[in-house]
Amino acid sequence: MRSDNIKKGLERTPHRSLLKALGLTDAEIDRPIIAVANSANEIVPGHIHLDRIAEAVKAGIRMAGGTPIEFSTIGVCDGIAMGHQGMKYSLVSRETIADSVEIMLQAHQFDGVVMITGCDKIIPGMLMALLRVNIPGLLVSGGPMLCGYLPSGESIDLISVFEGVGKFVKGEIDDAGLKYYEEEACPGAGSCAGMFTANSMNCLAEALGLALPGNGTIPAVTSKRVRLAKYAGMRVVELVKKDVKPRDIATLDSFKNAIAVDMAVGASTNTVLHLPAIAKEAGISISLEIFDKISRSVPNICKISPASKQHIQDLDAAGGISAVMKELASNNLLNTDLLTVSGKKIKEIVENARILNRNVIRSADSPYSPEGGIAILKGTLAPDGAVVKQSAVSEKMMKFSGKAMVFNSEEDAMNAVMKGKIKEGVVIIRYEGPRGGPGMREMLSITSVISGKGLDEKVALLTDGRFSGGTRGPCIGHISPEAASGGPIGLVENGDIIEIDIKNRRLDIKVSNEELKKRKEKQKIQVKKLEGVLLRYAKNVKSANTGAILD
Image (cartoon, rainbow, N blue to C red; front, top):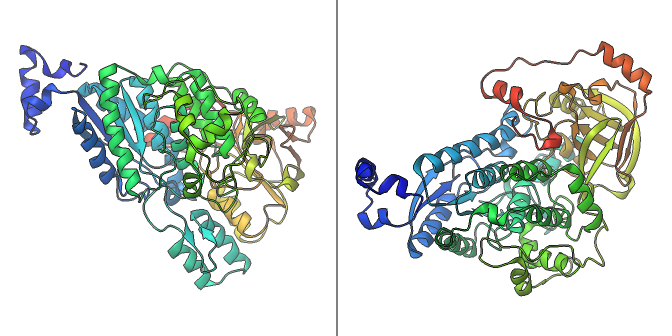
C-alpha cells in the first residue's frame, strides 16, 4: 500500500507513534488509510451539512475495511461573495483548493481519498487535485438545495431573489414582497437549487465517471444523500484494493461525455473554465472548439432554472443524470464503453436507468433546442473566443446589435443600471478578466437586476469576466483576449455598434481595422494595484479560453 511509506518498517517507528497519538490502533494502521477531504464550513449553505456527509463516508470506509482520516479545505460561497470585491477571490480559490488537497495527500501518503464537495470552485479544485495526485478516489457532493415557493405555488430560488432586486427597483414588488423572496427562496442546506455552477459541476463529475450515480441531483436533505455517501466510502476501499486510479477513468472520451451531458442539461458557462483545467491535470487538452463541436451535435433536452421553473429536485425525480445519459446513449451521442468509479461501465448504468418524466427530460427527437446549452462565439471582439449559455437566451436575442456602453468595472455598470441609465443596447464590462480583475468575477448581481427590470430582451451584457450558472439572457462572458492582455474589448468606445449572432457563433465590433489600429496605438491598459494572493494570481494566470489555469 502507498501508506506503507509512513507505517512499515523499523525506520517508520516514529511515524507509527504519531499515528497512535491520533488514537489509531495497530489494526487501523494496518488497513488502507483513506483521506476524507471535507470542505465543510459555516458560511456556505452548500457546506453547512457536510460534517454529516463526512460521517457517512467514514462509516462506509470502515464497513469496507479501511481507516478514514479527515482533513478540511476552504470553500467560498459565490452568492455571498457576489457583487463586491469578495468575488475576486472565488476563482482564485480553485487553485488554492487543488494545491492544498495535493499537499495533504502527498505529505501523508494516503492510499485513497473521498472528496466531499458542495459549491462552485470546490468541485473543480478537488477534481484537479484528484487527477493531479492520481490515487484511487472519487467525489461525493452534499447535494442540491430544495427550491422555495411563493404563496401562489410558483417555485423560487436564489436567482429569484437577485432578480427580485430589479423588480423592486422597477416598482413591481414592494418591501414585503422582496422580504418574502429573501425569507423563502433558500429553504436550507445544499447547493442552490438550479442548474447553476455547483450543481452543473456535480452532475458533470457523475458523467465524467468520478462520482457515483445520483451525485449531481439527489437533494441534500434526504436520507438517500447520506446513503450515497456511505456507498462512496465503501467504493473507495474497493478502488484501492483493485488499484483503479482516476486517470484510468477520466480519459479524453470521458471528458467528451461530460461535455455532451453539459450541453444536454444546459449547464453553467463556468464548466467551460473548469473542465479544461481538470483535464489538464490528466494531461488532456480540451479546447473551446471541442465544446462547440459537441454543442452543435447534442440537443438541449433539459431546461432547469434559470432557463425554466424546473429545479434539480425535478431532474432527480425524473431519473437524474443517469436518465439523461440514457437518452443520449440511445441516440449514439455518448461513449458507453467507459469505466466509472462505481465499478460499472456507463452502458450498465444507463441500461438500469429510467426516464420518469418527459416534461423534464425530453427526447433527443423533441428537444428544447437541436443544439446544446452552451455556444462558443468568435469574431473581431473575441478572436480567441467567448461563451454564452444559449439555452437561457430568448429567440429574439439570439441575433442582436446595439450601441456599446462601456464600463471598466462591474461596480460602475451596476450603478448605471440601478439609476436607470441603461434601457437598451450592449453593456461592455471590461478589466474583469482572469488577469485584469483579477479573478474573473461572476456578475450575477447585474445580470439579475437587468432581467428583473425586464430589460433582458433589450440589453445584452458582454464581459471578459464571467457569469453565474444562474445568469439568463444575452450575457456573453470569457471574452478573450481580455482587456488587460490587450484584447479588442479594451478598444471599444461608447457608441460603437456591437453585433451578436449566436446561431452563427459571431461576436463583432463594427469598427474598421484601421480605426482599431489607431486606438491600439493610443491604448493605455489599466493596471490595478494588487497585493497578496491576487498579485500572485494575476502574474501567473492564463487566458479564459485556456480555462484560466495558472502558468
